[in-house]
Length: 313
Length: 104
Image 1 (cartoon, rainbow over the protein chains, first blue to last red):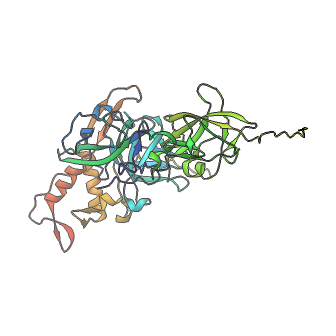
Image 2: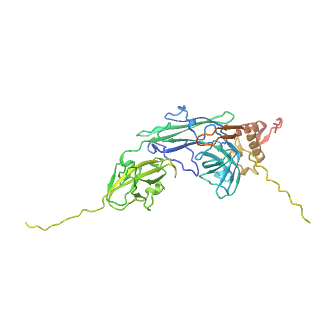
Image 3: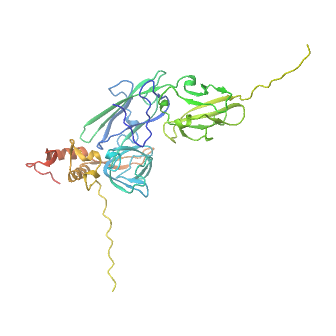
């Protein structure tokens, strides 16, 4: 069984093999959901390197707490305030995942939503508001889901140079005590060496690239189909040089989808010499959680100055 | 002659469980039981009983979230109760004829 796809949320599609792994250190939310709207408690959440039995139970690391299992068939949505109303938001926080179902969306099948803000004890807003501008709605089925935030390679998961198989496991019960289990496989891998990680003009950008072009080509994890799960790139100041000399082709430095960011050469600040910057990589647009690397590029675009003399012999 | 001012009727409190006007208004997971389509009254009854058979719980404040009380509905028990009182005939759920009715 493959991971479910969350409509309208940013799914990390990398990790299906050692050849298409998740980059070590990438911030991830493992979201454990349910579309039956009858989960009442969590028995276990775990990430192990062996299929089957639960190793260390990580349910204490879940958000919301594993004891929070609010559900209702009568949630509602107010299209003026853009807020959802439920019987209680106790235990819920921004960033948490909830499952909601309404006949008007996704053929009536429940889908996950990420909480943008908990407004008060009965109201919240979401980041992926597909109800927006479609009028008030009632009789929305609602159920808390749970997420396990990890940095890839930590929090129970393991990485290695060749890629490590990790098994995410989830066990939940309904109020009758029926136990459901789910296990999914994903690979995490160390950043490859040299230019295979971050390159400028095909040279290792972390060690320091060089060239004579004022529009160098950036590549990130080019040999990994899913680019390690990275969704966006942006620029920040180099941590030592305290400046950024790199811009996207459109002259901006702000966050771009990885495909758009890498689709055109970069532009640089004017003049030859060392160019410094810090590449910021995210698995979720706008996230406060990032993977970052200082990079540099020495530009020498000036041809040598030749001299010629006519001398006696 | 002055007309008597009508007293505004306050809006009724919304029910704490869903009540649908038709089957197609219900989310997918509520429409069928054992892969047999329920009628809208049956869906609404299950929603009501899921709420009534649920339980209240509470959680304390945490670092990231406010605590409070919340309800866990018991959709599983509501469905099981319904299945004890109904059976499938001609691909629809019908009440058991000799079943002693559950207390509503």
